[in-house]
Length: 558
Image (cartoon, rainbow, N blue to C red; front, side, top):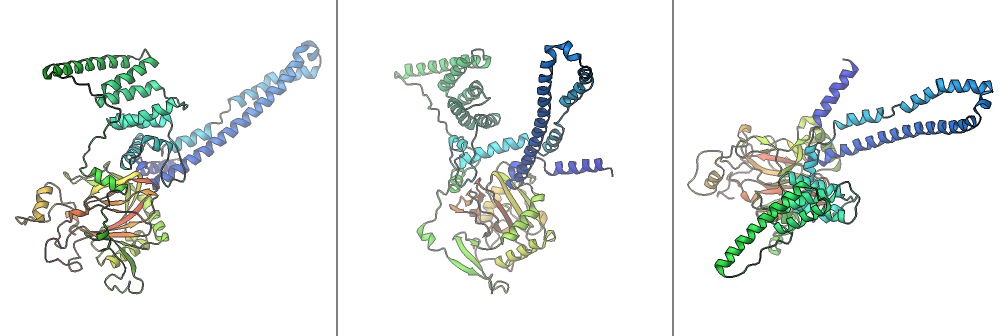
């Protein structure tokens, strides 16, 4: 194969492999740091080449300035010397041509070629939008005002950074284009505030006020919308849209006054028109437990009472006298009593963690969820991460970690899913969800109890694991492969628990009762990562093969 053709195919494969969605994985975003560093180095080399070229041109100009000053003072006397005459002819015929070639010399080729290649791997518009929404998600979850985010005042940060007027304006535009007027107002107000403080920017106040006034109008705050529009017109009296908006707002306000007048005439009382203060409520969304979930992410509302605390213990765990763990048992700590959630310490070494991250990174792809109606895997805004699946054939360390999880839990990995490795991106999260399938596995329904509730609530949901033939997900084993400076907790909104990542530890819980019924209390979430880079790996154990390792209980909820 010809070298240029081989290079073409190599680049094409790389482009395909790294296509978009950088914002969903901090691990993959680190590649962008090195790409930008390479571009800066290339730019510096271009600047050095330009400086050398300009230095040569400047030296020539200074030499010629001295020479022409002398020759032009007495042209005939100067040319009387035959050498001077010869050199004049030579300069104009040869030397000036060489200078022309020097001036026309293009030193940008190396930099432009490098930039063109690197641009193929740059983040896309989708990445920028995703990154902006991630900041807004952090803003909402952790109750951060735009000023805090703009100034970069976040806990646990090593490298502080701030947002410019242009950055804040960009955030507002992203929200506006998404029909999110709540965040449009917040970020346009911040952009306007920094603009009023005298920050240098290419964004005009007129542009900011244009977006802000309309977003405020969407909240029904006519008085403030008119105030902002008048301010815009005072800066640009020729702004056509602002002029027509103002006339429209005035008509609406007049109609409101007429309605108020009619009301007051009927009731014989006068009422003052309602004027909003400029602080608007965040709209409700699709998640019913949003407030509880976000409070737990902030460490608020955790229902760890002194009475419950007394029921939690630490112990050495030998996997029910598993021969491999008798000499070296694992440290086990109760995180919650009911449902029982435990944490194991020193489950994975730093070397194992780095090896698994190294194996997973090239395979990382946007994490998907199963559509409850169609059963089709798809990406979703409520799950922002990248994941990959590792097989035991990939490296001995995978088999070693799988075996260790089997020894700890006493469950078989033969019917378990592959080891999933996940890396969370900007504001990476996975909103409240169940690990188990809610659809009944058989049509034999009781007339009462949890199985009937399961059927009634989830009768339209496809059986997510039927094709595997291994039953439902009986248990979850979650390895924390990094510490997280702020955020990133695993929370259980139903009973108010929050578990914080600790590198090298793992948490374990059962998703099903012994009867095979789903334990709906285990609905859990991965909170957005505020500061840091979160890596986890998990193993989902299934029912088949564990019938005798975890036999049925006497009741449906044992």
